[in-house]
Length: 263
Image (cartoon, rainbow, N blue to C red; front, side, top):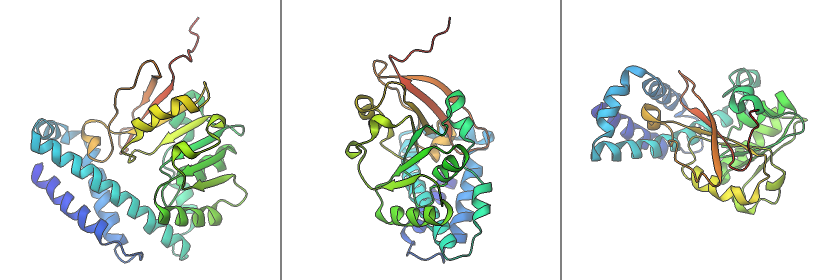
């Protein structure tokens, strides 16, 4: 498996470095990511991953693959946005191919028209926000640290999200002045500092906020940052949503002092 994964690592690095603001390499990267997604969702590869991850060199390889594949995910979203904006992709195709069902993402506490949802790591093609706002009527806000992704994302929302309450911002999470109003938070699986940000959010969010943390453990950690322990004084893990065949799973968190009555 190490040889195969090193091959992916080299191709990811080349693909990320080859992005030039055009879509001329889009098809090759789509094929590469599709192949990689198949590898990380095939249970038959778990034993080989386990042996690899037990070695120091294997751990370093896995970490490098996470970083480079995350860069490529960011690039493929730019390709999708550019294709849409150039008129080469129909909007309906993207609405049909939703990232995940909103009801499944949050379990029994899904957003509704009165909710305000924050997506950390909205990217260039904010499909989650578009679908969430269109399906539920919720207010949706995305943040991202990549200026090009923000520009493309805003143009995508302008084209696909007419009438929807969606904003994309470039502020750091501690600069947001509306955090106390947010009811639901989604962390993209490729945000490397998501658990540090979760810790930071405890003091500035409402008591009943629900957090959906996309993650990948084991074999899926080749494509995602894995689940980490949380401070039990601050957050409690209320459930996990396993998604066989999908590249990430979902962990649900609520504040530790917010208890669901069982009697």
